[in-house]
Image (cartoon, rainbow, N blue to C red; front, top):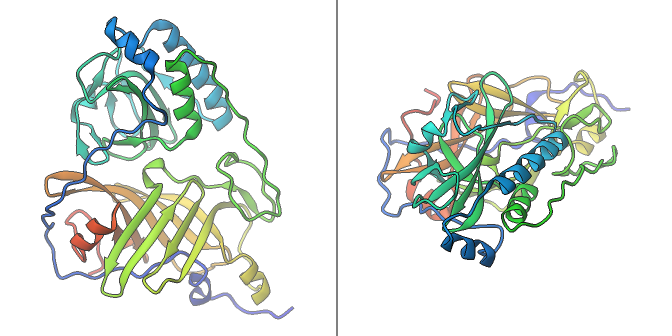
Length: 364
C-alpha cells in the first residue's frame, strides 16, 4: 500500500470549503425588495376545517389529545423527549426563549408576523398557535415546534436556532400527521429504516445514533433552519449550497459540484493512508456542532483530516431593508472567520454582493 502523510491541503480538497467573498463595505445595505412571508401548507385547505370555523372552533380537546399521543410516539422514534405547553406556564427553552410569551416578537422566515397562543385556533393572528412542544438538545440549544392554524390551514412551524425566527418544518411526518389530526384522520409513525453499513448515502429516516460501520457512528443532523437552497455572490460568480438533513452539496461559479455527507466519527484519524482510500471517502465528512460567538455552527473536517480547522456553517438572520432575513454563514480558520454569506435567493445574493454585517466575525 502506498503510504503518504496526510496534510491539510490534501484533505481540504475533499471538504466542502468554499471561497469566501471579500468586501469593502462595513455597513448593512438597503435592499429594495423585501422577503415576504409565504404561508404554505402541506395539503390543500381542509373543507372540514372551513366548515368548523363557522361554528367558532377549529381545535378541540380530542384533537389536542390525539396530537399529544402522536408526539410521544414520534419523539420515541426520533430519540427525543418533548415537553408540551400546559396552557398556563411558559415553556422555557434551552435557547433562552419563553413560549407562548415570546410569540409577540417572533418572526417567520425573517418577516414580522402576528403569532399568538389561541386554544381554539380561530383568532385573527397570522399564526394561531394551538400546541407547543419543546425538546432541549443541550444546555444551550433546543428544538421547538408550534402547531398553528393560519387562515384555517394546519401549519407546523419550527424554531431550532438561538433567536426567535421560525420557519415551516420540512419534516414530512409532522406536516402530514398534523393535517390528519386536524381532519380527524388516523396518524402513522414510521420507524427509521436501517441503512447498509457499506452505503455512503444518507437517509433522512436513519437515527443519528446508529452504527453505519467503518467508524461512522450515525449521521449528524443539520438544524431545520439550515435546510434548503442558498446562494452567495462574489467577484468570481455565484455559488450555490443545497443543505439537506445529513448532507451539504455545492456548485461553484465554474459549475464544479460536490457534496459532503455528515457523519459522527468514532475512530481516531490514522497518520498514514493510501490515496485510493482517501479518494474512496472523499465525500465523507467528520462533523460536529460548535457554539462560537453565539452562533451554532456545524464544523466539518475531511474524513482523514489531521490538521486545520475545517469548514463551519451556521443558520443566522440579518436585518435587510427593515426585514429579518434568514442566511447561512460560512466560516473557516482557527476562529471560524466569516468567509461567505448565503441568501435564500439569487436576486438577494446579487443585491447584497460583498456586504459585510456588523455582528459577524471577519478576518482582519
